[in-house]
Length: 287
Length: 175
Image (cartoon, rainbow over all chains, first blue to last red; front, side, top):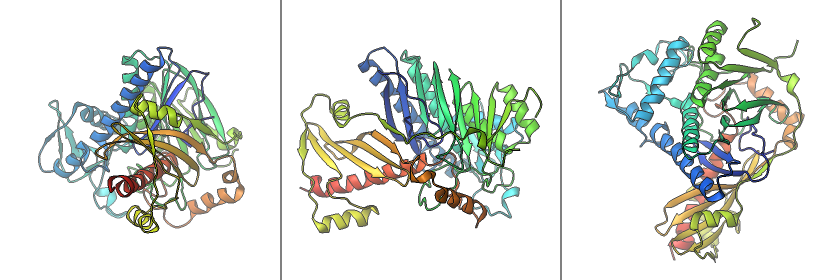
């Protein structure tokens, strides 16, 4: 049973499947396909799909000082900045999910906030995006696409594969998964990592999972987009894991945070509107 | 929850199914060589570091140096390296192609091997988690992560590549 991801285990398909993996997006990104187009053509298609992921990383990594997102975070509070259409697409989607979820999903983070000041800090309403792809921050803040850009990058890889005629594929970025054709993926218990699995059949769908994950003695791992409760602005302390099934991975990725942090009625409404479903693995003792 | 709810709650106890340890081979060393350098002839390059050089590599990269772990080949238009990093939960081998200028051209994961299913499933290990979750404040970005250990694996690969570049600078570019 293969996987670079402790959270999701895509099932190995029959013989003839080509799989590759690269370190990207702060995780291992895996692309696999059983396409019968011929090995050379498939390898070139996978190469282009990785390049699509790398382009999104170059634009939207918060840890790369040369990324467009880092440039925005340095300058967009002073003057409007024109952004790449990919960045605008992700920001537009992030602001839409923030509005739909009443701020339960929020791509902004306060700069230097403490627990006492965080709640009064800037929020998604302080970010403007206009039709000319100009971005402006009304208050000093940082955008962090950790809750959504990985899903978008997976979608871009999927689009690249489809453009190259590959219909049967899986793209897995550390648990953000998009499937072309039909495959089973496995969810894991977020607390007892080795203990439990739950199989899900995906058909031309995406699945993303967010979970609090405690890593004693991990040291490093600072490239991770951690979960921060956008209302309290404090780190998420729960042990619940939420997985969302949706038509694309950007939606699935963002909706996991909506389900974890929004009141259930709002989460239900947003899921319905986005034609998505959520699976919550709740480690509290079963009744 | 209402009958037509879009949210399904599953008690974790309901999905406790044991799985064997996992391993995936993405590419063999030979496949990666062909992918990165085509049919160009590859010649093994010995990487013998003196004790002083090894200490320099460890100091500059903050990693441990294991003699013989990293293997190198010279191609007509660059260098091919095969290396492995060991994390707390996994072992990852990977290949790196450098141009003749020493710049990274490509990185491919060769093999991923996971340690779950062994000692990590033990109750003692699990208690670490439980204890932590109720103890002192959790450090942002260190103890809570969006999706988990895959990120740590990536960090180890990044550390490994930094070490690889330092060894290249001393043992190949410096000669």
